[in-house]
Length: 325
Image (tube, rainbow, N blue to C red):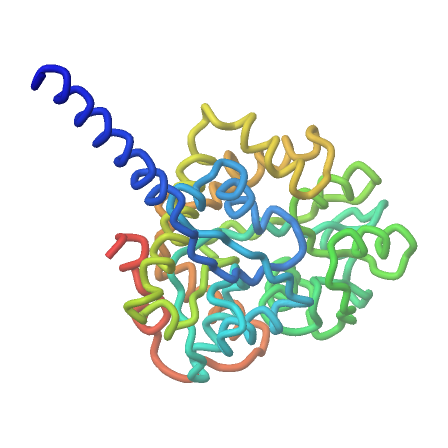
C-alpha cells in the first residue's frame, strides 16, 4: 500500500511546484523610462541591449522617450519625467555644474564619433572660412567641437555662420543644396554624405565623452529603484563588451542597420570607424577623467563659458552602477 501511495505524493508535490516556479519566472518587469534622441550610432549600445535581450535578462522593460533635442532630453531626466537617458556629455556636465539632480553612470562613447565633412569640391578645412556651417545646435558641445577643429586648422571660428540643423540627414541635404558648406555628421549618415560627394576633412581623436548614460539621482539612489538603475547600466555594459568582441561584428552591424533603417554596407563603414579606428566604445563603460575635462578645454579654447569650479570627476560620475553595487 505504502509503495503505491508514495509515488502519488511525490507526483502531487511536483505538480504543485510547477505553477509556483512559473509564477516566479513571470514576475512583471520593472519599467525604465529611457530618454533618447533620433536613431543613430549614438544609440548603438541601446539597440544591441534591446535586440540581444540584455534588458530582458535583467527583468527590466525599457521604454524609449524620444526627445526633440539634447536640452529637452537632459530636462526630462533632471525633472524625473525620464528615469535615465543617453545624453550629450557637454550638456550633462554643465547641468550638473548648475545643480541638476543627474549623475553619469557610464560612458556610452568616450571618443567622438562625429566627423567633419565639407560640401562636394571642398579641398581643406581652410575652404570653410567665413561660410555657413552646421553642427546641430548653434552653440554648446558639438558647435564648440566644430569651432575647435576650425581653430586648430588655422580658421577663425568667429568668422563662420553657425546654422541650426538638428538631424544629420537634414545636414546632408543642406550641404547638397548649398545651404551650408560643411557639417559635423554622426554615423551612419556621414558615410551617406561621403557617397554623395561630401569630403571628409577632420576627426577629433582625443578622449571626449560624447554620450554618457545619465540617471536621475533620486531614481538611481532610492532603494526601491536602484536595482533597475544598476540593471540598465549593466545591460549597456554587456552591450559594450558585445560590440567590442570581433566575433560579434556582423551581428552588431545588423542591429544598427535595422535600428537606423540604413543599408548594411553603410553601417559596415560605421563599424570600421567607431569600433576599429576610433575605439570609441569602452568595453566596461568607464568614464575617463580626460574625456570630461576635454569638454571644458574645447569650450574654453573657442570662448565658451568658463569652468565654474575646479574639475572633480566624482562630482559628475558614480562608478558604483558599473560595479553593480
